[in-house]
Length: 201
Image 1 (cartoon, helix red, strand yellow):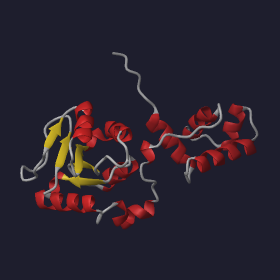
Image 2 (cartoon, rainbow, N blue to C red):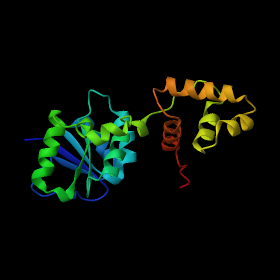
Image 3 (tube, rainbow, N blue to C red):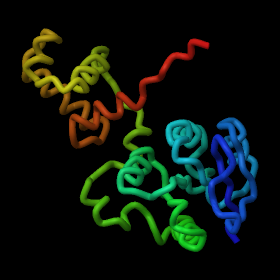
Image 4 (cartoon, rainbow, N blue to C red):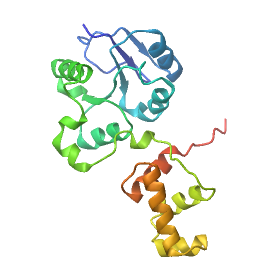
């Protein structure tokens, strides 16, 4: 039997037939559970996707079990977001306990992955795109990425940076290459996902 742990802000929304070895309602307790308990998969509430990216980043790749988001419906949009956050799968609570258990088992044993979905392969989305940290090698790379994120054309970026258009294009190409990305919009998405909201409390 799989050893499953659920993390979420309230109680777990899963069928009672899904045996869990533990539940946590805070990020700190979840991180502690991953580090101290042997579990086969960590299930977590879909709305916790962004904090769970941080949890995954703090645990060594060898140590963590598959991270599986739990959402009411495993829609295409939710699946894309789960893949972009770098998680291993998504299960929908409306699918019923047998289907949920079957999907979790397939994720854990490696017989199902996001590559199993042909439509998702066609999207060409890099796994973990939203969990990436951009590698910025030049002092003004951050400003350049912010301008790319506004959707400005290269001519306007060149004018604002006081650069030639060719320099803008070369620097964007370098950023894409250094970060193993294919499209300039990916730069903007990663940058936006990495911005932290200050804590004013």
